[in-house]
Amino acid sequence: MATINSMTALLVDQLKDIYDAENRLTKAIPKLARKSANEELRSALEEHLQETEEHVTRLEQAFGMLGQKAKAKACAGMRGIIDEGSEHAGEDYEDDGLRDAMIIGSAQRAEHYEIAAYGTAIAHARLLQQDDVVSLLELTLEEEKAADRKLTDIAESVVNIEAAEGGDHEEENMSRRRPSGRRQTAGRQRATAAASTRRRR
Ligand SMILES: [Fe+2]
Ligand SMILES: [Fe+2]
Image (cartoon, rainbow, N blue to C red):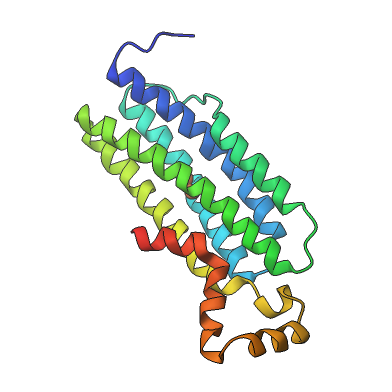
């Protein structure tokens, strides 16, 4: 393994890692989309697949700007996230909405990983005054953030909480247990993690 002896080499090394991650995602996203029952979720994933293919192209351009050939270096982090995602999507769920909620969780983990990776690479490219690389990677970073926000929005509508909680009977019990004004609060609990993500931005 070559020694990383400069900031540029460090940046190139990170680009190789992200290049591998993005390439893996071009194969993983269609599988998640196929398993999604919610149409909005499926089309959001398909749309982000197209963006992901563009991310691969942008990385190839960034390598070129740094006088390097595009090369991938196995990204163990993304491999793990993808493995977990396909494991969760393949489990048995009583309600399709529950699988969709899990798929959203997996997709958001991938997005957050990408957001972190691009954030660091952009900071390093900025230190190196590689302005063209910075601008290029920032386009991708914005698309990753937008994809994450969209998934958060979908998460709030994807689960039919009544079906997922066992239908009318359960609903009757729930309305007896608390005043009707609290229905919205219960619904919001579906996407606690996603909503807290949004609040941070
Ligand atoms: Fe990406
Ligand atoms: Fe992404």
